[in-house]
Image (cartoon, rainbow, N blue to C red; front, side, top):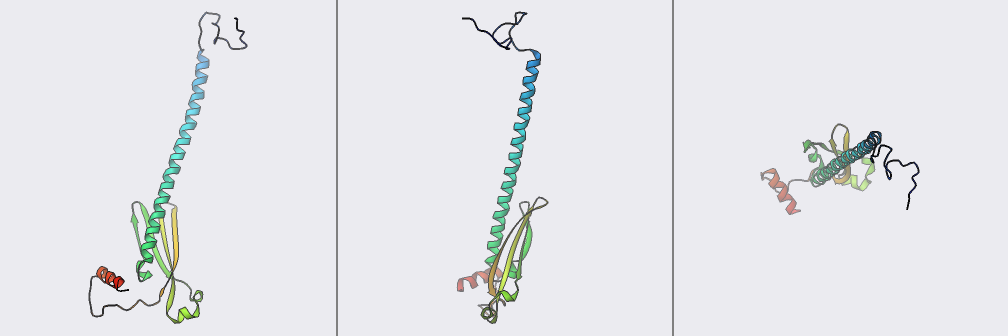
Length: 165
């Protein structure tokens, strides 16, 4: 059985000089195509790695903001929750402000209730920021101490007052 080749020299039949194989030009073209494909593959890999790292930092900032907001809303006086600092490469700030009185009904204002807006802002890198905010209804004046004429360490006093409520 005899095969006819149409345009493929050197693959099935030896060349005129009697040697089979690829020419130098064919090898260089193949290596060039391989190098271009490899460069595109490494570019896609590096961009996906950068995206994964950015996503991880965003998730960590979100968890930190949720933790700070939970701590700020757990306090008896939201104004005492104001703070700023840095943790693990993140800059954060907790603010608590009163909102306009017209948002509260008259009955709530008569009983000295105040609406606070607590906001947590977490920043990283140079221009990345994640913010959470919530509203909390509290008495405008702090509650009187539950144990008069007693001096306790502030942490103990807050624990005692929480357990009595």
